[in-house]
Amino acid sequence: MTPQTAASPPASATVPSPIQFDELFGQWTDHLDAQLEEESAQTYIRAVRPFILWMKGKGITQPRREDILAYRLFIAESKKPATVQLYVMALRHFFKWLEREKLYENIAGQVKGAEVGRGFPKECLTAEQVKGILAKINRGDVQGLRDYAILSLMITTGLRSAEVVRADVGDIGKAGDSAVLYLQSKTGGEKTDYVKIPPPVEEAISEYLRLRLRQYPYSPLFASASNNSHGARITIRAVCGIIKARVEAAGYDSTRVNAQTLRNTAVALALHGGQPLQEVHLFARHGAIATTMAYVHSTDRAQNRCAETVAGAIF
Image (cartoon, rainbow, N blue to C red):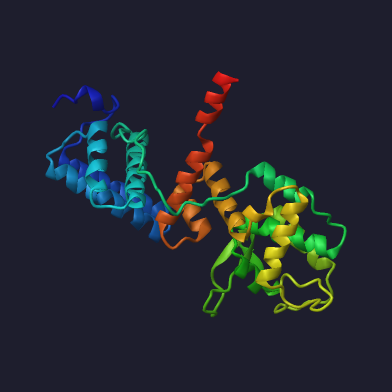
């Protein structure tokens, strides 16, 4: 069978029949199972399987880019925009793998997802803003060391303020060669989940702890420095106050920056740095991958250079 010109596979590839596409889908799922955590792999698989069924129902043996676009319109009739975005991204992953394995052309590479109108993070900081905020913190005393450690930890790990408050000194440990912070869930219980602590942040925490009085494994990782509650576990309100004060000291509008902004920043910078969606999903510990997808939408908008192009033409 002669391939159609618009979707010709690489010269070394054979043209798949519908049955072969089933087999290729199976090979791809095996690849995902070997590379990703089970939840992320199953999310991708569930997102691509309907396309395989749709293609077979339409009698399509050699899908083209136009077929991907038609399928996107089809699922948009019954799916929410965030779900459409997920399905399209999964198809891009599938066809990118097919191309890499020299099995079929990547016909989904430039296909956009749906507009996600709600739920994407409204505020996040740039890397330069983060550097400016951290640089303004005077680490000459225990309070400055604490605040620097808190902000750098939240920005690099995406920790929530409550997780920072619940952390104990004994929660810092090792997983392989990496320093980690084991997390206390909302309902309590054994601390089995963790976030990796980058070396500069580990050093910042260690420097802070060295200046504190004698500590025990159950001592709070971050303690109050106020006269009324010195040494007691820091509160969520205090964490919010620290963020506000340090943002103002760096010259930024603190009314637009809070603990969630730091978490947004961690996720956005990970995506901007080119980390795969499934890795960022695990990093952020989102319940649904569609939540992580909202950050993809926000990051795409932040990287859009249209305004600069128009301004350059005018000014």
